[in-house]
Image (cartoon, rainbow, N blue to C red; front, top):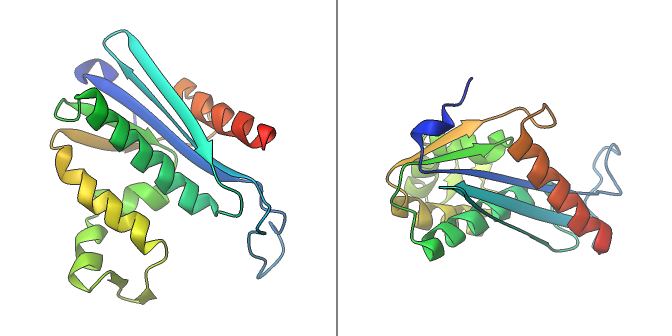
Length: 165
């Protein structure tokens, strides 16, 4: 899908990742000392701000959600959360519950999936709490590592953070 970023006041890129030492091993979990990080970049009106952070032992999905949540907090702090915003993420894990209205279903079921427990419930509850502050937001998917400069920037930023841990 081609993005028409000129129609938006700001474009936001977020990403999350982990260096899971158990990756590729069936049933393996993230180890407590595996580095994990998130990042965001907000571009608006010729300005730009970005940040990265992380916490050892967290999953990729937790970091994807955290990067998104941190960007929402920053947009509120900047006072531009009511503007027409374009979020560009490579995480369908974050985007699908928003775009396909799964969040409302989880909430209606007491923060449970139809098929059982909801992982990362507290993070999803924070997303649900914050989204009403963004009435003019569009949430778009981009393929990761596919020449999208904003996505590549946040991926690089979170990897630099993990390199320092």
